[in-house]
Structure formats: C-alpha cells, structure tokens
Length: 191
Image 1: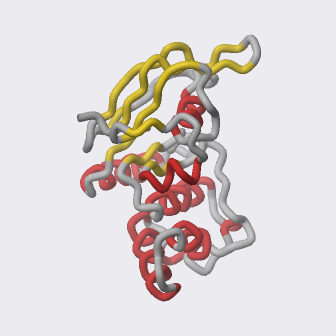
Image 2: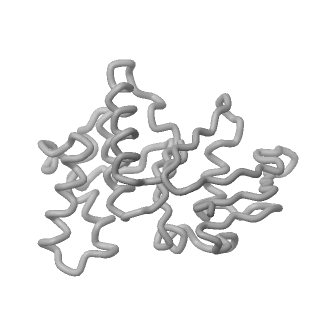
C-alpha cells in the first residue's frame, strides 16, 4: 500500500500552471526524486502535499487519509515532515533551540526535549554548534539545521525541497550521505 498518493493534482496561479495532473505513489521505505528545472513546480507540489496550498484539482492522500484542506500543522502531525528551499531558521535562537521548537510538539519534559534535540544535531553533524545562533551558520549548516528540525517532528515521510541547492560542491556529498542515512533509519523520502 502506498504511503503517499497523488492523483491528478493540479495547481494554478492565475494563468500560470504550476502543476498539471500530477499522479504518483510513494511506498514505505522508498526514496523518490522529483526532477525538473527551476520553476518547474516542484516546490509548489511540496506545498500542496504539506497543506500550504490547496490543489485546484486532484487528490492527495497519506496512508489512505485525504490531506486536501488540512493545515500544515495537521499534515505534520499525521507524519509528513519537510524542509524548505528557502531556509527559515529562527535566526535569533541557538541551533539547539531551533530544534527544540520542533521536539516540543511531542516531548512531555523540557529535559527530554533537549536530549532528543541534541541527538538530531549529532545525526546531522551539528553537535558542536548547539549554542551558536542560527544567523551565524553557513548555508550548508543551515541546510543541516533544517533537516534536524524536520526530523525532530518524527515523520514517517520526509520531503526535502532542494536539499543541496545553494551549497558549495564540497558540501553536497555530505548532504547526500545524510539522505542515505535517513533511508537506513527507515524514513520514506521525497527529494
């Protein structure tokens, strides 16, 4: 059974067609890549799946449940996490605090939240940066922080929007390796 199903999904902005009749399935444990040039509608499709935009036509389902009309926080609670093409860290908060915001959605105790958040930072290679303000991170480090925050929501499906976009060539292999490690953890991925 598919974890994520899109059937005939279309999204327009006035006369501009961002997505036209998109259909595909993602099964548990798969890594599915969406390929296309800038402006092809990949980020818009991520926004449709995660509740930021409502499709003009079509169906989006996660584990058989219809997602159309749900808010982003509701979609996230069902088990879909995501990163964004345009990085959105809380710049005045530390790296650890950024991840704790996501952890606190489900953690009962702040001490447990801190420990869990540190685990995500270690996983993405930012364990030594917990006390650094997010504004002081490089683009590659902000990508890793974005990934840690998405992981902290404990998703079953993780949507990674332009995960290697805007970083230098030296950083890309490390990010690709992280994607492989996420798959080893049992996450289903759309990139």
